[in-house]
Length: 246
Image (tube, rainbow, N blue to C red; front, side, top):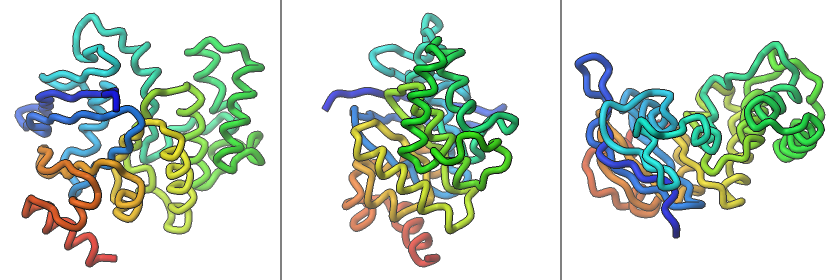
């Protein structure tokens, strides 16, 4: 499989605190990578560094052969190819569902409005939100907002989708709807990198599990190994606690 993203010796500080420590990861095209670990371990910061919402202090992020941290990198162009879905949706609450999904297409990709609408309608149908196209975003439930946010990101035709704990702000009955959308996405061959606390989803859908703790990647392997025979004691302790909570 072709490598689409390579992270080399990535470090990030907030003030004097080193929050990401020498992270290395290779992501193959079409792969689903789930990043797990305790709260405060640096998972979301790592994800936000990948498209430079947070700027790393050192290291390399090589996406489609370009180092994103290099001064010569065309960040706007490269960011367009990396969709992001946030914990708290980040929709334009004053716009309706359809306009949320076309605004980026027309302003950033310079698509004609008719084409943008056609693409938005197709994607909203895929996530079961076609009946809500005229609804203002602020009137939607959390699960509905997240499905619109996924459609909006997909409308930009990304090569990679980044998900930052996409179900953490949802009511329990809404979580399944969003995870089903993500399962369907995974089956299309789109590359996904997902920070998640949903262990069943990670076990079922991921090709690769990354376990992080205290700003470090302690273990990377397939779900079979991570969940049934983890090598690192910290991974064993974390999974035991998480699974016992259920």
